[in-house]
Image (cartoon, rainbow, N blue to C red; front, side):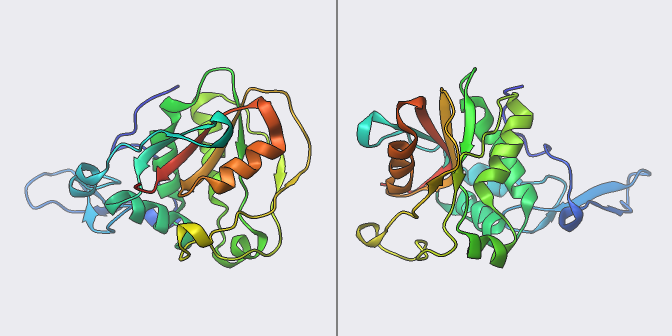
Length: 215
């Protein structure tokens, strides 16, 4: 189940359905789709240029010895993938990111996504971490546990400096035995993951994100 992502992977959603076009040489139609990152036409869900721009994410040691791993570095094509997923509702970008995260999910663990603040979920129509966890559960067989509730409102963290960021105040809906893996889309300072780690306690063994900011 733990397979590496490929540019061919993933079913097409309504916004990214392939288009059949006639090729001037071949007698068979050619599948054409939009790159999930740069949105250029091509035959792969992520074009070669964007795929070559993806960089492996760093491992980080956060407070209380929480290890945070990331599939990609949050730069270039990976940053655009996350933006398209979170703010443009291109859910197949989330599928692609989850495929990159799947090999890092330890066997025997449960997945705990960090939900989006309610008003942003309503505004953008996507809750990134639960969506990633849903794909990861399908790809790895690990159960998804929705143990957290997000606040209705919270300050937008995206454009704030590292020192000015304040994590949302999550509420624990229920507790579960470990081992648990926290799932989120991006780690910047690690403050949000650390706050959830304190809430859920030693049952959390690691955190896994789609991307990690440099530095």
